[in-house]
Image 1 (spheres, rainbow, N blue to C red):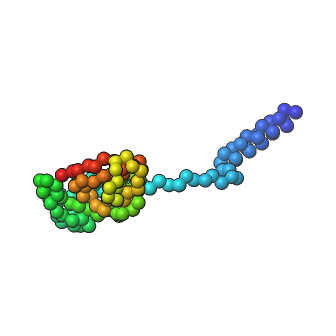
Image 2 (image 1 turned 180 degrees about the vertical axis):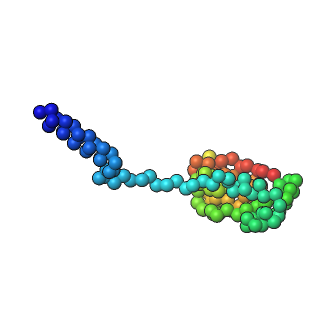
Image 3 (image 1 turned 120 degrees about the vertical axis):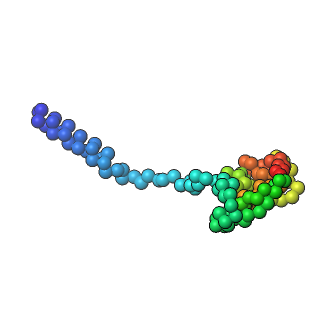
Length: 136
């Protein structure tokens, strides 16, 4: 009797170990992969480029920016004009694309075309137009 019980325990142990190693017969659905965010944002990259040759090498435009007309690198975005409802969906920002939209109104915007954030723009945050923001 002890011999049969020992064999049963041994067999049960082997089944448990094999099932743990062999995987499951049901297929596990993987979650869709989130887009991988770069370690450095496009805006940070543009600000880090301190010379015209470095800027041009990255496909940017070296120009005077803002009220103080400081020479800066402006990089194009790869998602320019893409429909968005929040800046988290864009490389730089999601901007209201239609004139006359009031703050707080539900709207769909467009991703900014470059790292140039100067001027007066209304951003789209969580599907709604935010207040006008002027950066100079």
